[in-house]
Image 1 (tube, rainbow, N blue to C red):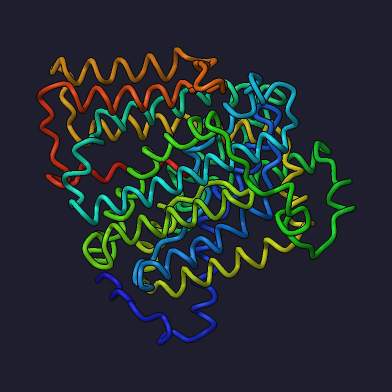
Image 2: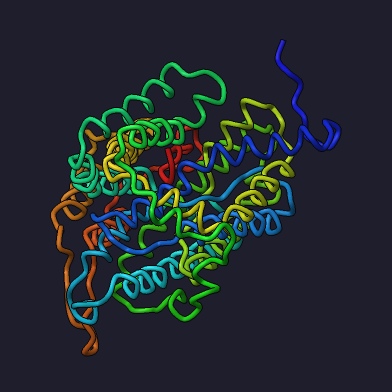
Amino acid sequence: MDQEAIRDARKLGVPKMLLLGLQHMFAMFGATILVPILVNSQEFPLPLSIQTTLFFAGVGTLFFHLCTKMKVPAFLGSSFAFLGGFAAMGAMNAGIYAGMAPAEKLQYACGGIVAAGLLYLLLALVVKLVGVHKVMRFLPPVVTGPIIICIGLNLAPSAVNNASTCWWLALIAMAIIIVCNIWGKGMIKIIPILLGVVGAYIVAVLTRQVDFNSVKEAAWIGFQPFITDFGGSIAKFDLSAILVMAPIAIASMMEHIGDMSAISATVGSNFMEDPGLHRTLVGDGIATALAGLFGGPANTTYGENTGVLVLSRVYDPRVIRLAAVYALVLSFSPKFAALIGSLPSAIIGGVSFILYGMISSIGVRNVVENQVDFTNSRNLIIAAVILVCGLGFSSGLTFQVAGASVTLTGLAIAAIAGIVLNAILPGNDYEFGKDTGHNSGSLGKY
């Protein structure tokens, strides 16, 4: 007999509530900290802070709950969808970005994340005014699916380069993740990324491949960089950076809608209606813009925590808020951040091998589950143009606007081309919510 669902965790007592919150923290932890680890790697490289990331994951989650009337049991962590944007910003070397220090490039990238967060607010306003069905007509799976595929494939060389620093260690990380995800039970199946990182890290320590000098020098307690170096962490704004980062919000917003559908189905409450999709978009958008403003990555709703809801059958949002508080506490430890930062590049590469491939695979799943008909020439043309733009413009497209140099990345060009073609080509018969296919899964995390 199935365990009865619990909607008020207080009746379980404080100790069990604290443990449930800890379980949710473990579920989100591996993916959330992996974003700054990857962005700090030699393939990007931009100095995104682990402390800042954890801080705004906690703050963003609490703010999201406030915006959604404390009703939606969702955790907001780092979005992997924006890794392609960070990679593009790290490689930018034209116009004002020529010779620019990585720390300043990160500030401009974060300015683009602020703009992406504001796009959430714009979509929320449109959803409130005209309804979700009319909005989604312009963002069907034939557009969002190929864009997601491009995000993963653009990142593939980074995974290979990192893994090549020590193939056997990368393979250990990959093997642990695969075994835990395929054959694991319960919580083990929920946190394969975290277990893969920890298991491979223990092997690296035993084989003396980890340098602990930075860990020894770091303080146990300290503020995040956006507090200690306020001016050096505040976002800067430039049209090129905005055009690199902001279009990625199209994919992450579709992920958000899918996650809201999944959480609603899991809990048995229609959160799309109450508190409403417009409120959840506002919460996610402001959390993303706030994080970007102070040097953090974009946030997104986390499917891992939905998995924990299924596992525990405790649907009380209070336990999610406890996980957010735990993230806030950990964000005040530079020593903890230094320990995470000591991960060898090969482990990052091994994790990325699976992660980046899964991002593209989720794009394929988006197309398959929604039964996109590729015998239809219209759909074939839209997908073809998106894929060629996303993969072909490897160096982007630079042009002058009013005397200023503007650069569009391949992903930005692909997104614009896909939306425009979908709008002008006749025969768009996509209807959002027609079946369960619109729950496209999660691309911001494993």
